[in-house]
Length: 254
Ligand code: PGA
Image (cartoon, rainbow, N blue to C red; front, side):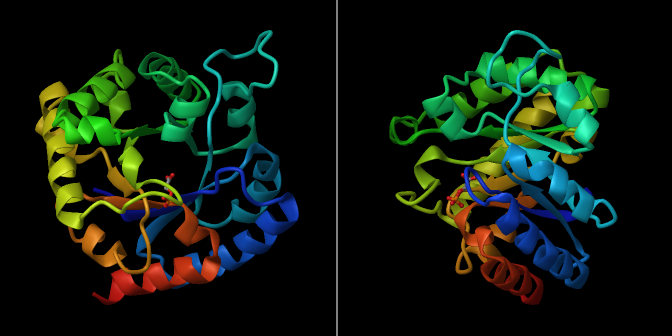
């Protein structure tokens, strides 16, 4: 396994000016905590300027979504070819907000995963059960369905360039209830076993599984210490660079 991952999806936040200010401070943070692999996933409009700043640093840069076609009559969409030319590393796919508001399905996630791989972008695939699925006791079945469809036709050579983010829908955002660390650990262990069944043990251990959903300065340490948690995927608590710094500091101390 590579370095522990620490990253943030900005969602629809930060103008270009705000993004530049944040990224300059992030570069200092990354220099202080080089034991982690940092990544940021800004809105499209920020990518070009941020790429200039992060080019010589070790920060992975990602986009929040893309179409699966190289080009075409798809008003409002961005293609993998365009993102590849910008020089980004990651493509976030299947975030629960995309699934909830923009008709993203497991099947479109799969098309996008394959397109990302074709164009040299690492897919960061978000999966997670909603509150009903959790309460009905079908979390594992839900995750298995999402992951099997997302990774259909992805071979062993390519799957090690993907990352999985486990983000329980009920844990995300303002109204989210953070998952108990032990619960996250159990689910991550299930996902690792699932990947082992789908590929093999050696491959499965090389696919990072990140936890996301109300990660904050109080729960980051215990989430990091769970089995099979290879990274933290942080929303609100990382949008302020000072809180992000506290998280990096705490997980390093303990
Ligand atoms: P949050 O967002 O940390 O603000 O809950 C997580 C996410 O949506 O990835």
